[in-house]
Image (cartoon, rainbow, N blue to C red; front, side):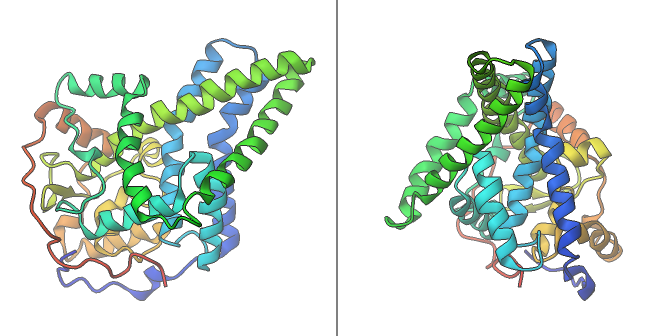
Length: 329
């Protein structure tokens, strides 16, 4: 990323106590997955649908947490973030942590040019296209589209002896996870056979379907707001935009958790932990007006839904090497 002469105070690179990070992470996870257990305990009805809606949308924030694990920003030592991302967050997301990390680093290095690994922000949401994106998401077409692009790239990058260890980890995690849902269902249905049927439905509908429909939809909207051109004040890199956001508590929870609201600042200096980004952005914006947030996620999406995006101009090669700060020291 081109620097504009900003001098960043070294304190913004410091890590907070692991105890604080652990409480924040576990609290966020608890709030997000709680609807699954509420639905498992309760009888089927509108509450089940509300649990699906909340869980599916809020899991985008957990996806953001996996991003911070990739940058090793959650805990003081890299190993802590590695364990959290690889053995808890990724299995919960049914994702390959290593593959995601490689794609994300490539996204930093090749933003808006050839080699870019993220194309969700190119989706046009102008007019009826926003509804069509939602429809594709709830029909799971958007999820299949994403995986069809990621699997070939992942297969090329993997070493044969270690390439699919993530599947073993995920299967083990999911077995334990389903067992906890079954145990919760048994508290409301004191018959193992009825509890099993109910738990299976909740696991499939609230959790799995919520993840592959609503979470995918929310992640697409977040990427569109962060990087699509023609959405208001931006800095342009190739065919991608960069912007920071004025986040309401609602937007911070569902879209901008873990520093995503300061997305431009993160791309500019990726070595700053997420909990320092807001303060760093305020200080840096005194010298660089482009860092100043002017709208929220919803406001930006509203502009894009009205205007549409210009046709992307694809440029070859990165604008300049962008490798510094991708991983915390």
